[in-house]
Image 1 (cartoon, rainbow, N blue to C red):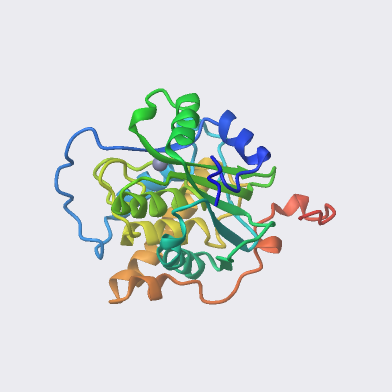
Image 2: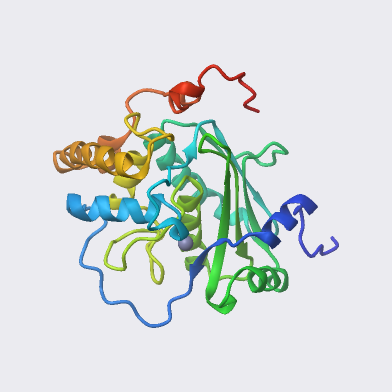
Length: 282
Ligand SMILES: [Zn+2]
């Protein structure tokens, strides 16, 4: 079989990748100090709120009051594209099944899907390097990256992840957890002491209990995408107080945090004053 430089990457996606200032997962510059938390132990409420703010709002809007949250409001269909990606399908399914429980949304991993909402590219190294060089100041530190596009209602429409196909397997696993968490609405990164798959450096290849709480919070019905930052944070604190109590009273954090019934996010997440707009959703 002929080797295509970028199998399956359409012109549209390639150009999107080229122009973005994407979310990078930087390689560690030096060994990280040992993290003090086990994956099974959540941090305290103040740390959760502080890092929810850092992660749910874009880093370039870190000091803006008008920022709003972004999240999916429709089923997610994630496809793996490119040589070398298929062997990570099971890992991807595990991550997405956790996200399905936490968000109340359906996550699919079809073999191929022209209507995929999320594309996970395993790209040749030279192509990856050229894209990273365009988008990042220190491309040699960028192990993998992603980009997420939302509409005016704060509803994420499409996302992609790019991972070089010669990356070591453990790094790929970290990249998947990290970048997929970006694509569900967390564009920022936590403090270095906050144990999370979105930490830069040696981050875990699974979602920590902190991550589970933050993801579940972002998709809580009490939060809406038209809230301003202060209201988001006050509401997120209320939500996380409840969720922490659930986690602390359970030996299965994921089960304790799972959405209890399917949610029609199309109807729920939309700002109320725009509810009468025609439903041109697809
Ligand atoms: Zn990142």
